[in-house]
Image (cartoon, rainbow, N blue to C red; front, side, top):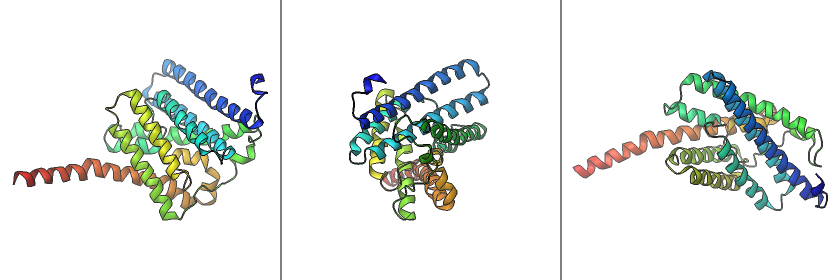
Length: 271
């Protein structure tokens, strides 16, 4: 920590937070290597990898949320960190979704069996809760002036608009992100990761001040668990049902409506 002593306290805290996030990424990466070597049962393998991926995403997002509160007058810094860690997650979490909506999409499109989907969903929800309490324990160490364990147990309502607008925001974010995820599969990996990171950053910029632009039920549960406890119907609708609705609309559009429209157009041209 000695090289940080010459920096301003705010920069020291920022560097500490970044160091913690990178440490989580490295530890989860090491755990994934061990899991791939030691676990040979497909169910256990799928559960552990999804658990580790969701844990990494949630812990880093907790810290990113804290950084955004540290630098409210400089949102560019926060968006830069969002873009950077979206790249990191895209590079390190290959083969996992860390998002119940992603699992739902794969099951609806026939790319995943219901049994595997159920295992992955369970892993994500358990990991979301574990990451919350692990983050609280880490913050209790007081490594920065913003690390206070009580902060993680307080409900700070991120919904700044009425219920309908909040539902539309989360549904549209989920629709756009998963549409890109589905249609960028043919794009080269390095370019695809940058495109998805840029899209995530844009969605956070556009919807962050409205609902936080989470579009991930597991992540929302980890970030806002106490709010779910205090206002369950509202948060369930906004952070669970709305992203799922976005997935459903995306699948209906690209799998049914657009092909139907194309077929009708082809028939009319032949006539």
